[in-house]
Length: 388
Ligand code: NZQ
Ligand code: ZN
Image (cartoon, rainbow, N blue to C red; front, side):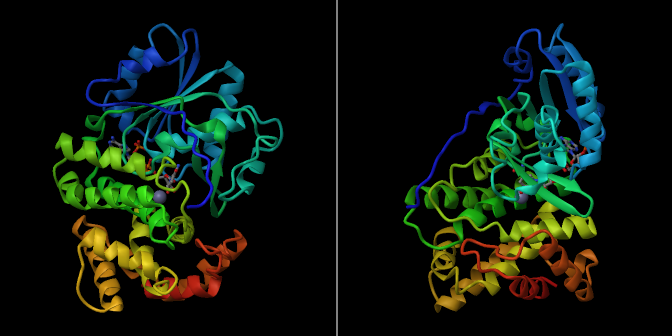
């Protein structure tokens, strides 16, 4: 097993009818900025309920955080935070609102150009660069990213999507009431299943490190998503399916399964470029890239792919390559069973756009990807060709 640190201070408040605990967990006397997206939380009455729970605290609102939250939008919130001396942020929404709020929390206390915070890639922004952030709480409305229990954010700026990781931005608390997801459009639920699935494979289908607990946890998350995937997508108000979906998604990216094992993230980094260039939803980019990634990288990932085939899909017969082929085909079928397309051409991306995607990967320094750091732009090109 590799050396690791594990630190996760987020207080999870999970289950039905727990929204009133927002007030109990927000510091008394706080000046709170409630942040939200483009209207779903306002329309459903959620924002009003959250404000009721906050009681007589001074509460301000900032709505309009878009999917794939943009730097310019978030800087408008930073102005409000500074002008109104806000000292607590409450994000109500999915990954985009929570990520955006983490960035606001850092940028509001950062004395230089906040674009500096976008320059660290998957490395943590060092504490001597940004060692302070406003505290945040979250009310999660979309199970997918794990942002509710991690310290990462992905911020869009100009033509790129930039990870921002900082230990100060773990939420203090997150309310996870699966019933708050009942209003989600079906496609967002499906995106959320795929995102959680691929977060898990990024930390599991790498090379063996004898991380037995981590592997079994990862296999448990994958098998759970396979079991409940179709139900959670098709039955909007199936509480138990949503509860399992939500907790699986949180555990997939809260640091637990990735501790002490190699991590890949190449599917995500390629996917981010596809979202930035073509506006394809995050989960959908992953559904198109992952099967191609596993196919092209089958030699590097062989041992774990065979473990994935056997322990996740119960594939026990055939040659090694036949087992791997079957596991990749089953993965693709699973995504498609949720209503998610798995070919870039089905999203309107033509093969002649691949060179431009490769240029963007290079421009963003994504030239040595994967768990072994040897996934070059040439290999990314092959993966994208396979994903067509
Ligand atoms: O803006 P509103 O009106 O709220 O609508 C949103 C949005 O249109 C809607 N929605 C959310 N909850 C709803 C709802 N509609 C009805 N009822 C509800 N209960 O869903 C749409 C998508 O929301 P978004 O937050 O963009 O989706 P998601 O949670 O999938 O987040 C995607 C973002 O997270 C980043 C992605 O790159 C992308 O920017 N990621 C963040 C990660 C992290 N922080 O650890 C890791 C991930 O790999 C990912 O990269
Ligand atoms: Zn993701």
